[in-house]
Amino acid sequence: MVCLIPTKDNPSNITSMTAMALMFEMIALIVDDLATNGNL
Image 1 (cartoon, rainbow, N blue to C red):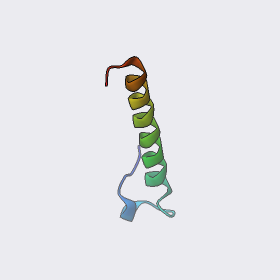
Image 2 (image 1 turned 45 degrees about the horizontal axis):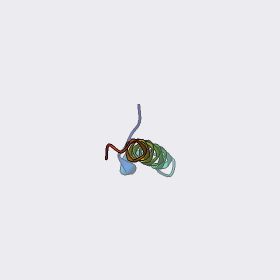
Image 3 (image 1 turned 135 degrees about the horizontal axis):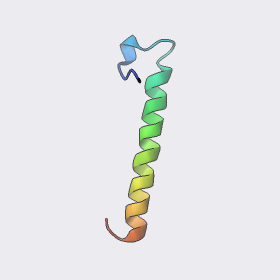
Image 4 (image 1 turned 180 degrees about the vertical axis):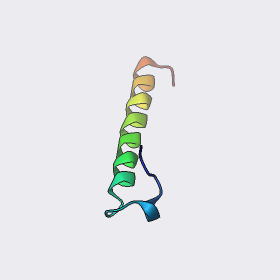
């Protein structure tokens, strides 16, 4: 379970930052795959 509420996330909001980085990586890989296959 990942808490995405920065005010409730201790210590130092690390869970929301990690989740944000993972979501960014996943979206980037999906867009890259779509662009390579020419479906974008």
